[in-house]
Length: 79
Image (cartoon, rainbow, N blue to C red; front, side, top):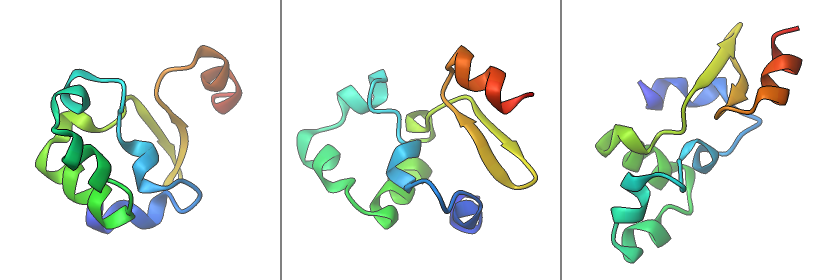
């Protein structure tokens, strides 16, 4: 549940979890896209449209260690 889990990514803004390159985001009305400027709005959007959540998300000990696929970042995170 994103509301309960938001504490597990304190070093990242919730808006960082929104995939703004995906088809779901591109199909959103411009007003909806513009409204995702706060943590509360980002969480509400991710609850309503789960396909907008950036994936994959790697978590270790309750903290996000990698978000989205980046081979270099994965190598560092999984050492």
